[in-house]
Image (cartoon, rainbow, N blue to C red):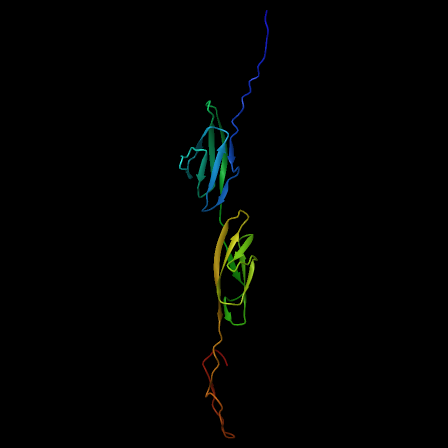
Length: 193
């Protein structure tokens, strides 16, 4: 007598997952990447990877100066392995620019409009958040611009308001003169009278 039975064997791949899935940061920053789906991991290359538990640990701190592609191989307790590849994107910081609509030094009563560019949002040192800022006082204005990648850049401009010189006439006080006898009056030195 005989009998037949069938058994289906399913081989499941290791579900390697990197978190965050699309890691990125601005120049000067870093990102922590955590792997899941295996028992232990091997990172390649190991450039820019630092971790107190070693470069092959589950979570690593990545600090690179330019976009780098990594391949991570995960191993199960049974010795099975799978690999995944992803890039760590390093975004450049924006260049903040302040453009004045006129001279940065002017007399009292004047003003200058400072317009920031280089980002999508702006924060001035006086806490205003518009691209343009109007100044009529002496001050150093700093603006931080933020771009679409949330990277930032900073720059400053100094505005100087010039106080008018005091007007002095010599001789001072009442001046008595005779008819047809002119008096000489003089003003203090200045660019114009």
